[in-house]
Image 1 (cartoon, one colour):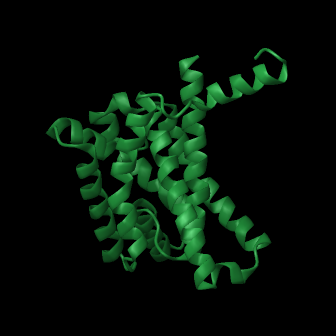
Image 2 (cartoon, helix red, strand yellow):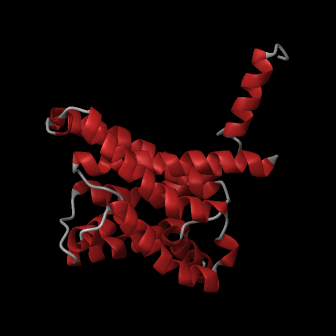
Length: 219
């Protein structure tokens, strides 16, 4: 039962990452550093962001297999494959169904950015704290944190900084949004993790169980 609950939390987090990442890309205020780095690679190679993210994670999968096998699980594969695909799909839908002016007016763009920023941080924290495995990009700072016995948040910030530098070297321009996400993902993961352990955030599985009981009159 616990695995089912955790799987639901992980899947919701992974899909949420893809959805909110697509909005961050479209408003052009800055994305997470992993997407920032892969956008730079995509711009030079001509392939989609989603495919770049899959390929970069395949490359980083080697050290995870060698040094962090315990971090490999359903969440690893789900994140490696789904995030890029969901992001590409959402961007396609946004271009098809949303008017251009939504992503051109400053006030609306700023509002979408703040909404997507909060949603992205929560989604990343849920997926990582579900303990269903981590994508290679996320696993590396986790492995370093455990091996060096340093706080995860600090190691994650440094790791995201390295990804941001690679993106800049490949031709991308660093924005305020990139910096904000680089500085907040690590602390957000730690904070939400503490809340989940203290059961301040209910599992998705608990919500559906409560809803089913309510429908059938068992509460």
